[in-house]
Image (spheres, rainbow, N blue to C red):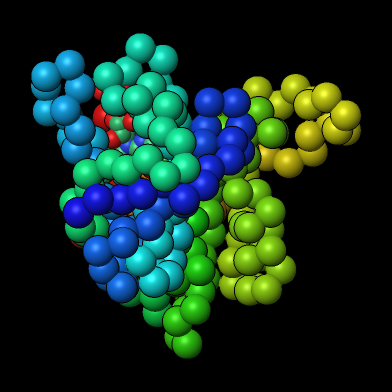
Length: 234
Ligand SMILES: Cc1cc2nc3c(=O)[nH]c(=O)nc-3n(C[C@H](O)[C@H](O)[C@H](O)COP(=O)(O)OP(=O)(O)OC[C@H]3O[C@@H](n4cnc5c(N)ncnc54)[C@H](O)[C@@H]3O)c2cc1C
């Protein structure tokens, strides 16, 4: 299938939010948390890269959040795309989706690992029997808390949703007052998010080092493998 760029805007330095449309279908079916695989031939080589969908199903449109990897093979090409340009894509794929919204859940993300959770959080909370959901989101600086407004609005609407951004470099951004929220890595707030409870599903998304570290902590706490659902970006 071909996906056409409808529009894009930058949400942080080197992080771009895209809206795509797939003209050949009326409805793009997917579960929140799934990804599309983009394919392109660059310098005679076929390149495939998966990207998590950051939006809920909405006709034949889908949204992505892309991080420019300096020196990367594919992302510099994606950052050249302009409205009207097209790219070859797979249908949505993947198993990183909500297992049971009636069960308490903790979502853990760093950086663009937030992407699937922007769709999965409203999906979880819209369920009539939704339990408690905590989103622990680690970034370096305050202005890189991607989709902060969306998650804060969701937390205002749903008392069973806790949005916990944490900054690893809590220096005041220009024009804003000092950060009074959580600091340090997501790992430092894991125990507080889980408490004494063990009947909790943990969803983790981000780069390998963080995902493996969090999984090791959870195993040490006695979590079963089946309760730990993860997506590694590298
Ligand atoms: C299921 C899945 C979903 C993904 N969803 C997203 C998404 O929503 N948004 C997104 O920006 N990326 C996402 N990725 C990562 C994406 O597929 C590419 O790996 C990334 O865009 C880098 O491609 P590249 O060709 O530019 O870099 P490459 O030339 O392949 O170099 C990648 C190297 O850059 C480093 N790196 C730095 N930042 C990243 C990063 N964010 N992801 C991967 N590697 C990184 C890694 O160390 C890696 O070795 C996802 C990956 C998977 C497996």
